[in-house]
Length: 442
Ligand code: GDP
Ligand code: MG
Image (cartoon, rainbow, N blue to C red; front, side, top):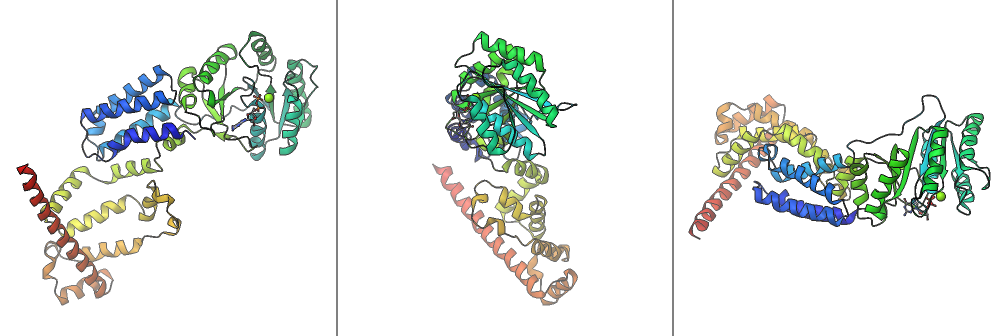
């Protein structure tokens, strides 16, 4: 779903992700690619311009420059603006204070109204409601039969008066029938045309005025791209829509409709259709779709947590110490503590995109208790010992083991590990210097 835009946006932003510092040129270049990606996805030109302007302004601003991971921060801004573009948060259906709730589905022929009606009925049934489907498409041959077949399949009653009756009468009688049966939701499947025309709009408007539905939902085919947006604007003008159901998002749609409908019409997308099979309709979550488009897994919440947990100044100080090999056990412990503030290690790993696809990852357990014991061991040492572990003779080691409630063997292990780590850093620091000199000659 939306693979095209997904991969092109990820490509545009991928170059930023790994950068430690961002120049204005980096951001400008990325924004040019984001713009092209959106245009290629058939997003409305005006919407693209507003979107890119907003992201660029934020990306060049303070918020990014001061952050720990500027590249990631830009990705986060794109994510937030994509979410906002698609409506921000999920919009639920309006339910009548006094049942039955009346939902009218409108849209062009072939958009997926009848299918969506059945899916919506199934969603309601799964939530302990008693829906009634009403067959008010009297024009398309076999439309009534189609709804009856679907109704039988999901075990939801279908009301009909044949194809000679007036659709407005059918809808009205349908609601009376619902009250008689004790159904609390009435879903009206209406007729469509190949193109928008006045007689259709007049009929739908008469129905709307007669029933005063709680929801007038436009069913629109995502595959039609910007046409879907034009259709939505027109229906909204004539009928005052309360929301949109975007169907066929399972196909290779380019995404323009999903990204533009809300911005162009102000109407929220409330559900999406993801296939011909009758399954409950998927509620539309702008944030989840945005995150899916950007291939982020749960990396967002990870960025947020890292931002909260890790002090930028401390991180830079630590990096300096690492480079100059002045790294002590105190620093070691502080790093452990900062990492542990992020949360349980196994959860963090699972949040990283890609990692959660590794087989067996759900069984992964990082030994939190071991991290705690290391912390306890270092805490039991004196200040001098932490600065210079080489003074740790046998009696000091015994004392620390007693103080932290572990064995001497474990104390030895931690000290050895630390020593090895420090050795390695010294070597890296040396390498760094050599490379530094060489590049200075070039
Ligand atoms: P209506 O004329 O608006 O009532 O449209 P229908 O409900 O009869 O659907 C028209 C065609 O689109 C049918 O072949 C449906 O199976 C198909 N369809 C409807 N919704 C979806 C969807 O979300 N995904 C896909 N792939 N096909 C769909
Ligand atoms: Mg139909």
